[in-house]
Image (cartoon, rainbow, N blue to C red; front, side, top):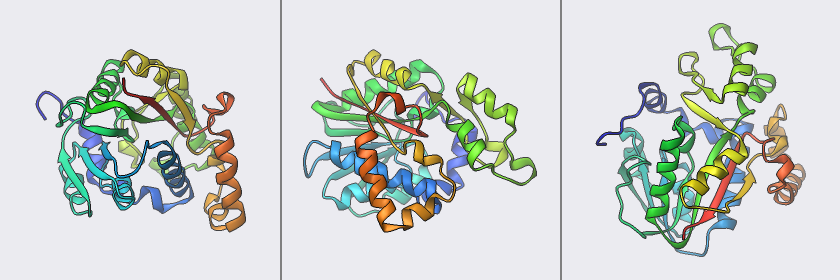
Length: 269
């Protein structure tokens, strides 16, 4: 990994293995997964593409991308996650860092950064990762990055309130994250070091990386904070209504920040 090393808490968090089930364990995770698949499938520029999944963890997205017929290369810095992803049919998995990708120039039709950007707390490192994604992308390829919105930690405090002594985020901590934009809950057993973006901030970082004029899409939207969200997803009519409505609202500028996650997308030059 040359000069780049994962912060201890980030590596330890992912080596726990919880990320392998996060998108299927509860309503919030299931909603994020369903919306990400819907968005990416509509944004990819064709069939049977060469897709680079950067920070792809154990391959939760790489698996369905390969099943859709794409040729998927996954890059992740955690060896145990790469080993798990390498077992998936149609997925090539490599140990590597988003800021120094182990691949050649102009090699992919789509470069997806679904996880690494929010773990890079320094702006210059985020821009470097986006430049690397652009380098690996063919002209006209899709470059897409997921970020966590600035209000996500505070909304999580209000709506889910992880209970039980030391595992409870304080009101003061939720407000500090809202003001300052960074979180680090490894010692509470929740999440790990991450940076929380304003929507315009990640758009500016795309532009600085040479990926100007990006489009942005709310992933979960404001409905992502509904308690007992799994009941909505298990209700056939409500689930269809939600997905149809979000396709109409996903790019509404006034709602971009009212979502836990944001997808920013541009075309490589």
